[in-house]
Length: 95
Image (cartoon, rainbow, N blue to C red):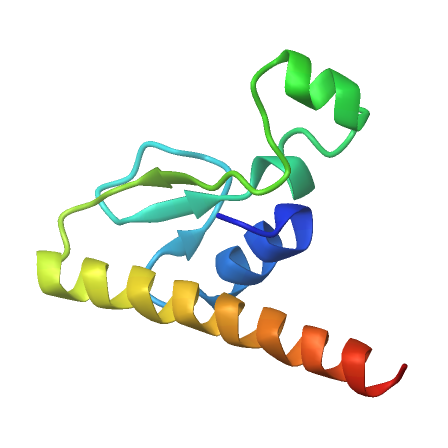
């Protein structure tokens, strides 16, 4: 994900098929945004030290149909890009 913590979190929250859970190990597709869930108690420096970047999503692909999985990821990525473009437009327009 490009765009750091907020972009990673927005994409994570936009997922529909993927269950947003921190416990991996199900037959269903699962997703986690470690910087805002499992590793949120760590400082940004500590997160980087253990390999967690602000924009990283952790995915566990399940047994759903591959077309459904790809469609869900594509729509979440597009939604996060669209929200980022809107935020820039608001920022520029407000100057």
